[in-house]
Length: 371
Image (cartoon, helix red, strand yellow):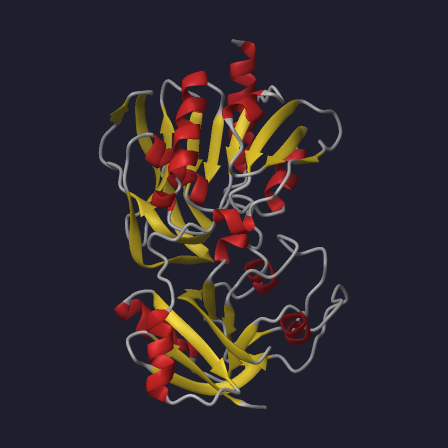
């Protein structure tokens, strides 16, 4: 087992052992607080170009299987754990985690103090990082290589993760509605949640035009999660504005929430260290109910949380706020069929407190159909 190094761009270095593939990799260092769901994290396209530090110390005990994948491959740039499991013990397991990382050439590191790394990132903020194993480089040379790697601010990554062609997830049971889902890095759980509610979901490339969307005569448009800086998505933002003018119901989550917010005229900004995990408390301002939710975002929306706002598409309001730091977690138009949330109601993995949001989308399409 080769010596490996985790190198942050502020010069701090953690020494551990190689795990998964050997070599070097670069990305944005982020920490993930979930105690379960590592396979869903690994295969979530929103983690593209990110090196994920798992705060739970024991990872890999349930192995991996095909059913829990959120996409066709592992997307993380690197994987950091303290104590990987030496045994795989689950009746659903089809492979052990390290073998899967090796097969997909994902460079990882083990036997590092992930608590210390997390505390460092909480103090200093998310930053560029490199993992080096089986490499003959000095510490100074490794730091220089990390500092040459791209930053997440300004990153345009959706083109890497979006589907190249439209495909359809059929409704389960009676087909009630048709939804055009713009694939900005969609997770498999999302169309499944819609299909369970009688929705035929057309997963469409991120660069689809309004004409492409209108060609399927959708009852609604879904804006998915995805990686990168929402400010870089100028064409998609303009597309969403065209959909808003057409009054087609819109539901956005995570990256899609940020895209909708920018389409309404708000700015986005980079969070110090982001929200990633399955234990984030969010309050619904309309009901006062607190939901425990799954998050994965490094950017957030600047919108007023203390009063309604005005847009060219009509009045709106912030509907959800994170109780940890006051970040905007949801918004809606009051006279138009559009709403979004920053977190993940599909809960893969994670709690199911927010699954009602899919029913809200169904209600929105139902009301539009009756007009």
